[in-house]
Length: 177
Ligand code: FES
Image 1 (tube, rainbow, N blue to C red):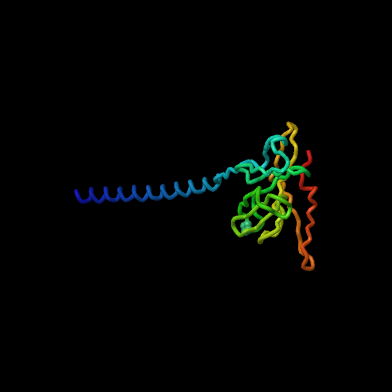
Image 2 (image 1 turned 60 degrees about the vertical axis):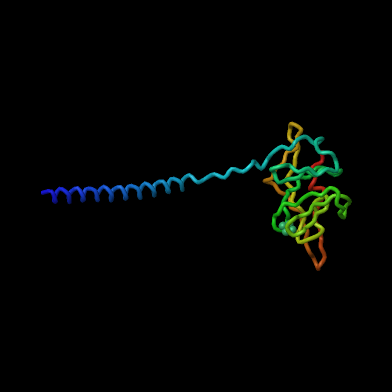
């Protein structure tokens, strides 16, 4: 009698374990499925943003906009939003205002493989294939400069018959205020 009782309890215990395992398995699969329906969101800073008034950027300055991967270049021709990403393999170049370049003082230099860009961000040394890209700049109704990194201007340089031809129309790359 005792033995029968013991084996029944054992059987019920096994059933409980089996059902619990199945419930855990099904629950886990359900949770995985729900996670699949609601994927993790990746939050990036907005690609359209304001960077201050034109008078904040005196002519001849190159100003890094921290956390935005962008410099505001202020030239006599206008303003340019220079994307801080080397056109070789994407490292972040540094701006050296006192180093001599082909267009006077100031060059960008990439720390990865040594590409160099003049103060207008045109490549002149190293493996970078073309100038730094430009983000679209406009003047917002409140009088501040607005950057739109979803619209990127790509300076064109091509090699024809062994000669480098720069088709960049620089005037298209400046915001005149
Ligand atoms: S990534 Fe800039 S030179 Fe290679």
